[in-house]
Image (tube, rainbow, N blue to C red; front, side):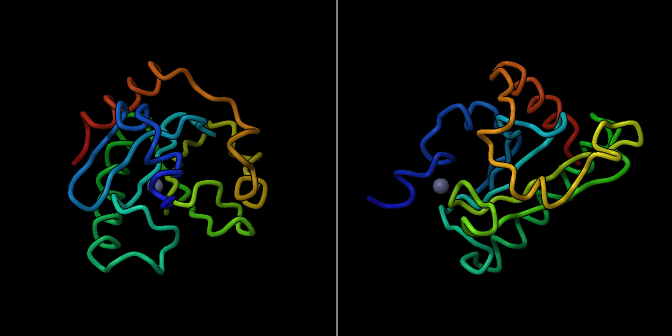
Length: 149
Ligand SMILES: [Zn+2]
């Protein structure tokens, strides 16, 4: 069985239902268990586990998508700051073996302001986070999509 057949990003149709953007190289969607509203994941289309596996054009596409999504998050979630995170391998806290960059929109008032502990975040598995209703996530995706620049 290939990674693509077992990877939860590639095999969960709900991820496609809440796509923010998708092109030949990259796609982005709100995570099902957001740490903060607007918490978005950016992935290559190819199911590869780490940054080293990405082709240069995929790296460029991921960072281009990141800029565009951040512009939208500034508008849609009044973000004035961001956290950018990716975890690699099980030892690094990676739960899905498909490269993904987390984007967390931050505001001065958000509840993570003093509670954000990078190591806690990095090693907090999805299983320990609350899953948002799919309809709510689709609405978040639509909102972010509307303001991509
Ligand atoms: Zn995958």
